[in-house]
Length: 463
Ligand SMILES: [Fe+2]
Ligand SMILES: [Fe+2]
Image (cartoon, rainbow, N blue to C red; front, side, top):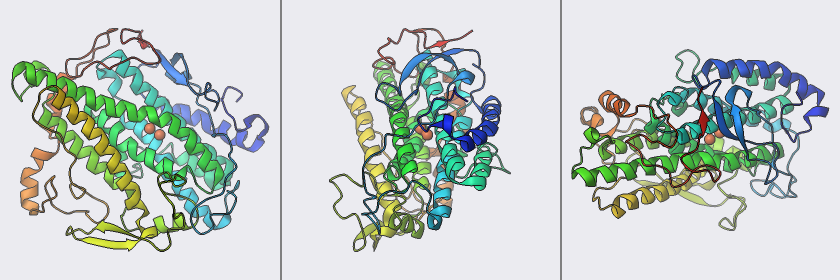
């Protein structure tokens, strides 16, 4: 057990050691069964966290993935108050308060379930990686998502007794996309079939994770706050992979459009911009669902109890940390505005922060098109498009949010969301490029390599 890097005094915590000793082999079995397919014996240039200090969390070395040292880290303790909700002046709790046990368990299990799910969703991508650089990034994301699973398992086993241990086991038995035993949230059951899915997933779906973690990073339950703070340091890289991945695709597409003077660039080896747009439509709308209902009594309870705050709750941008009196405007399904009590609107607030962040990235992609002299622009679909959760669930509308009949939606859907044909055409392009320093035709090389290394570096030593 000493090989588990940690700053939670694992050596002196008998009970936790025992629980982890039972779970660890099952985790490895899970990794072998549904983790990255192949590449078990390849040496991957990965970063590993060995301490929570600024120089300890990103140690680069060649590692075989099954031998990765998954660790347990909390951000350093801070002298702080809960700072929001009904009892902002209280000191954060070091144990789970009995009255919030059910809610906290639900929050942790829901977050914990997404981590292994994403590893399962991405398991086949190594085989079609457009470069060793991208392959290495994929595997970095995979081992870190698995570490995030460890982070949540730590909380469950350390603070929730027997039912926590049972939940930790369950996290290894649900399976992404499985009919009988699926993962808890929709987007984590959606297949990730190719690299455009992967980049969009990291950009949009994982970014929901960032916002959820940020909202938990000031939780009154201090171990949860400190765990999620540390996870956010790793999450930044996942966001980078997604945003720059899409950007490199857009750049390449724009180059080929100019070269061929055409919008149809498939034959030239690129993804048509119209197809890129469909992937954005799908993953963006799927990810908006993850924020839950705009009007939510659960969200109000979480906030009131000090379990989950807003995005950057303690920043100077927010002055009223009780949020008792205010209202927040949300859209109804017919598009009309409605004001609801602020606390009930916490999901909507978090989502709106997320949407602003997505729009920032969109601007960047569009300036890539502009600077290359391409007139077309990408967009993010309306919040009402293709939704299954919240006020817009089941609403038939086009990506601009104009409501249409169900029949019209069904007949036009193939113009807005990736079709089987789009996917098989993508698959035709996405032949693996596993040669050092080389890159596939459909994506531009990255602006720089990893950890100061050039693109022409053996990021993965294949055998
Ligand atoms: Fe994660
Ligand atoms: Fe992530």
